[in-house]
Length: 256
Image (tube, rainbow, N blue to C red):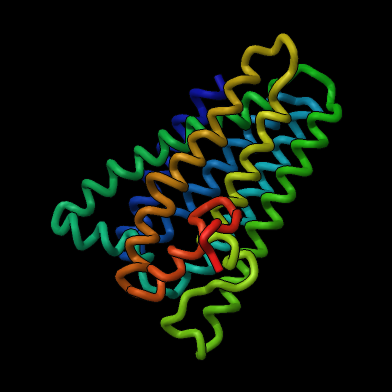
């Protein structure tokens, strides 16, 4: 069964991720493995469906994983450990390795739930139509927006004059985390690809964007990153928080 294979594969991938971070002392690399493993689950599920829709799902999952995984790899390669993981390393102390192993298996479980969106879309028996076109447009907008946000932040950081400053240019002027917003937007495409009258499993695809929103906004995305930014940027970041929304790129009413 494809779902059982995906679950086992994701668990094994995060075991490998644990060994990699232990060998390199850089836990930021586990995000690369998680992304590629989840994308691989989408590719496997799409190809297993053996249909035009399945091929579309496989292609989109591969595009998502290669874009995001490649970006995370470039960001972490040769750089200090991601501040979020460095914080966990300090908090957990001597218990870091066993707790990290358990933490990564929880990430594998989250990835398994997210992969249900891929599998539901791939197994949708309806012919490709307008809903799929809308989903594809939404997905590509999310991918393009995320890539633009990442490029703007990287360009800002490369400028020596911006050392210690807060990036508030381009998309970052409208949202403190536009890369997260566009990531969520791309995941909103899967219900369009999965839903069809009479196809009960299509509803499962809504779990993907719902879980991704929860993870990004309330768990592993914004909270630890904002905590790290407040420690490193202090009042500059508090002022940024006061004038810019955290997630949705909507101007605050009291912003000037």
